[in-house]
Image (tube, rainbow, N blue to C red):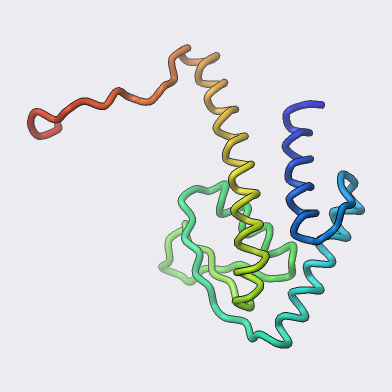
Length: 145
């Protein structure tokens, strides 16, 4: 199994966890899990009115991930003119954000970021220079230039 296949399997497992199913691995199972989450969102919308949320994300991968999750559940992400590209707006029930969307996003984001960090470190180490560690921290003597 390649690293990418392992990553996809982890993402499917997280999806299954939030959909409340043990079915893992196949695209059909993932689609069914997303369908169950969309049904849950529809039920919540009837009981819990949608609220406009403003998500501020620090990197393009996280922003893309959140936008994809929102779209998967039938919620259209947007931002207002003048807002930074780091902003994602959405109208969703608060309970869906608290119980499903945000916890799922955080787990998926952690897995994806760890994967991307590993790839980045390997590419830098192999393609640029073997020591890609962080810069050494020193005590400041005067103003930085």
